[in-house]
Image 1 (tube, one colour):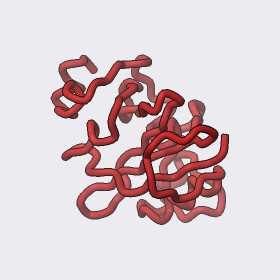
Image 2 (cartoon, rainbow, N blue to C red):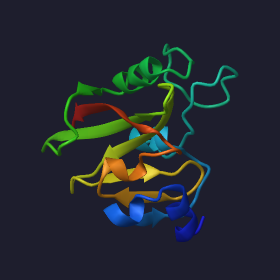
Image 3 (cartoon, rainbow, N blue to C red):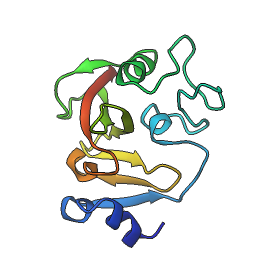
Image 4 (cartoon, helix red, strand yellow):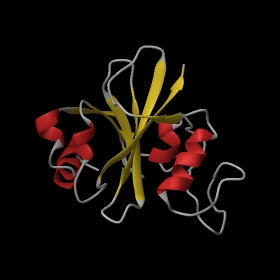
Length: 145
């Protein structure tokens, strides 16, 4: 996808600042990328075509996504501010509360996201991806490094 296409899908990105950090790939998605897994596509599909942590319900609910990340050592926290010694992720939901995206915080305090089957980007603000594509940030989680 071109930079122009990315900015058309996420019109807040140019204002908030971002950089494309890797080429497009279908090896993993944003949910896997947030968990630092680049070897699997994560999704709770009922046909079990994609990876999903064992014993976590295969349903597209915020609760199931929280449980999936809890299985990786994350717990809910209440601030997206950078905290030394912690890894943070942000879960986005659409207007119906259905999970749509996950981003991971970098040691700079900025965020990294995989845009579906497209590129990975580094973005300064969680709000830069908010809108019709991904909805808004619902939950912040963290785990010790």
